[in-house]
Image 1 (tube, one colour):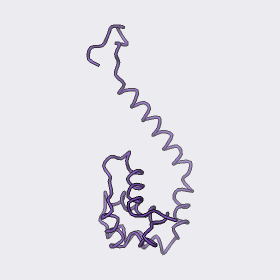
Image 2 (tube, one colour):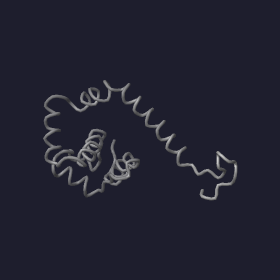
Image 3 (cartoon, one colour):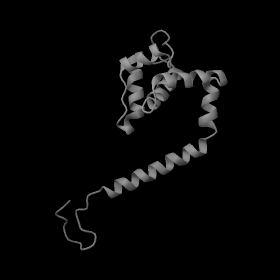
Image 4 (cartoon, one colour):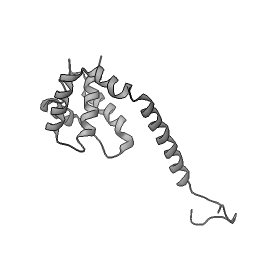
Length: 131
């Protein structure tokens, strides 16, 4: 089971929504398939491996050309299958990923608290007219 092109586009954009600077379209996905880093959909549906590749390509494309990304994926396929590559990166680094997410959540909470408008001046107790 997989996602059709429109659903895949929405899925990838949902994952990258917090970044606010990364957005993908159906034509970009078709281009990635045409250029090689993402395999063809099966019966017009994109599976988990293809979506994982789309996520990687979309991120890497911000810093390197598509042909380099294709070469990286080809080298990866020679060494590891996709499931082994996932376990090798995400599985081995589970604690680090969990710690990063926890720290990021804490930083987000602190940033939210800093940006809260103060309607009462915390130092004088008077109404804050600048909020």
